[in-house]
Length: 290
Image (cartoon, rainbow, N blue to C red; front, side, top):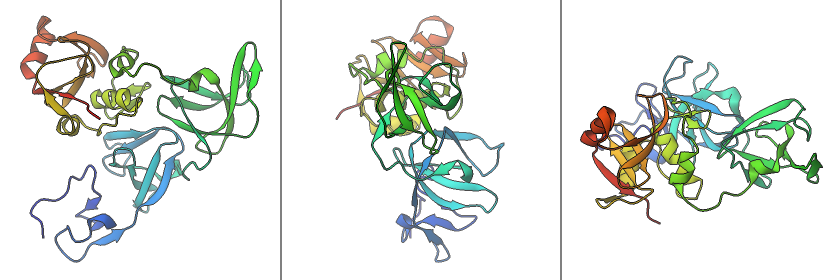
């Protein structure tokens, strides 16, 4: 018996329905739990994960196209309870948006935003929306050249065969999460968002670091707990505030997605009314270490 339940953001257990994931067997109070073995799945498009199985429930995070998921259980009304595998975050999403995991050679999208086309030409119909971190499968066939552009045949997570510009898949250089975060400036703020179509504060930090193989948990408090606390700042350190996080560009400037400006902006701690409020509310700084 335990006195404190595991974090419900990352450990699947619903006291009202008495459903729980198999990994929690023996850790929950009571004998009337139904334990479920998670099943591999994937997002067929950019999926909203919500706090409850309702379209009007708050978005808690997003699953990017092709991202690996675990399907836990369904509510009987078209909603599935799933976990994003990379950070183990839980939420409800329409079951129709789930597909089989990508099995063939996979490619990672490195453009902030991108589209997939029906054929290798920019005037062709758009058949898919992609974003930084999305994954597609390499489809059979050779790279096509058209108008000086190179097109790669891919299979989208929903099975659609399409073409994407080779530049959309170009490797990122210079592992500098702060520099990558700067490319998101003016991206709209969206609670629970994790893409350049809209993101929140911890979604920005998670994306910027994961692009270079430096995984972070989903929420700001989880990120602060996971990182090494520091007092002497350098570029790329994270600054933490109650329910908020940003990436330091130097000892004073910070890039962050914020609901004050409803977009990604650059602030100077201690400068101006907003900067002064940020500095006064700062709870510490953290550094990603291998």
